[in-house]
Each structure stands twice: as C-alpha cells, then as structure tokens.
Length: 251
Image 1 (cartoon, one colour):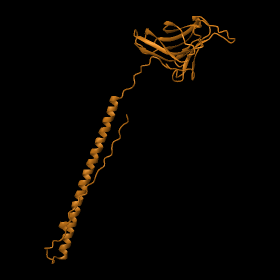
Image 2 (spheres, helix red, strand yellow; image 1 turned 180 degrees about the vertical axis):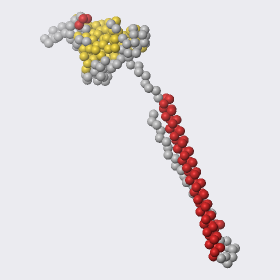
Image 3 (cartoon, one colour; image 1 turned 90 degrees about the vertical axis):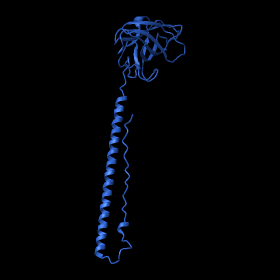
Image 4 (tube, helix red, strand yellow; image 1 turned 30 degrees about the vertical axis):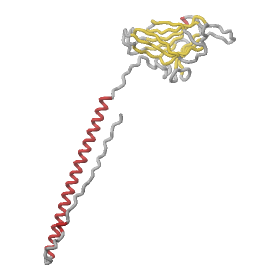
C-alpha cells in the first residue's frame, strides 16, 4: 500500500469592491464650492477608499492563510493516520518452511549427497530450474544412493507428511527391481519402485512420520536388488531418479 500524498489546497481569493458612488459630487450641491473644499473632499474619499481596500485585503489574506494552514494540518493528519493504519495492518510473513532449499533452486545448498547422488542446475527438474539426482549402479541396500538434509521447526511428537516429486529413468518396468525409502533420523518406511514404460513426467510420492525432535535429519534413499539385462552390447546396470520440490506438512 503506497502512502497517499497530501492534496494541495486551492484558495480562491474574493476581492472586495469599493462603492464609489459616495465619492461623486451630488447634483444638488452648489457649483460655488471652492476648489480647496473639493480637493479636500476628494483626498478624504481617496484615503477612505485606500483604508477600506487595505482592510479588505488584510481580511482576505488572513482568511487565506487560515484556510491554507487548516488544509495543510488536515493533510498531515491524514498522512499520519495512513501511516498508522499501514503499521497496524501490515505484518511480517511467518516463516513456515521445514525444508531449506526444498526445490534445489540453490543447487545442493543445505543438502548432503551420498554415493551416486548429485545436483543439477538446469536439467530434469519439476518446476523451477534445479533438481537432485540419485543413481544406482550396483545391487544391494549397501550400494544405495541417497540425499539428506536437516529439517527445522518441527513440533516433537506431531505427525507430518513428507513428499517429493520424482522421475524414474533408465528403469525397466517388470525387469529392474528397486526400492525407495523415506527416513527420519535413520528410521523409515520403504516402498517398491514402479514405473510406466515411456513415462517421462514427474510424479508425487509421500510418506508420514512422527517428529522425534524439532530438527531431525531427513533422508531419501534408492537401491536395487536386481537389474534386468537388456542384452545390448553397451548395457550396464543403472537406474536414475530425479528429485525436486520436497515438502513437509503437518497432518
């Protein structure tokens, strides 16, 4: 909300007219009036006219000064009132993020990348540029690829939902056998990875947990127990998962 600028007052000056009829000689007065008396009468009338005009001008200036002073004071009061209203109704936004750099817009800032994991600046992202990738090239949970970060401002014993968007690449549906898991301070839930052949879009996956503390460590892991050999000469075991837009909400 922008501050309103005070509106300048426009004062209209009313100039007082002087009745000159009393200064003109009456037709019933004798023409024998001396030049000296006529000059005296004319001088007195002129002085009277100047006095009347001066008084009218002084009155007009005082009225105008009073009007301008009153208008300026009112505008200042309105501005002060507007500022007070702004101060009362405008509040600082409340920080509600549990994740820092949840969309990887700042690369890997705040995150840890395990074996086979990393961060991308401008490729395979869900919304704004920036994503994480985990890549699995050997079988077994000990060969898992993962990313992790510390959460913030959780309420201990409160239930939360954690989610992210992922895109599973180099995965053979019905052939590769892989598992992903959500972990909070090393304790988590695992799920069987599945995908539709030819689907190259991001999908949301989620899990629920009870916060053990205000700042636990979140970890997302992917590993495979079997790679389907396509029989191609350049085949090597590989499954990639691109990750973006992580989120935590209270439930």
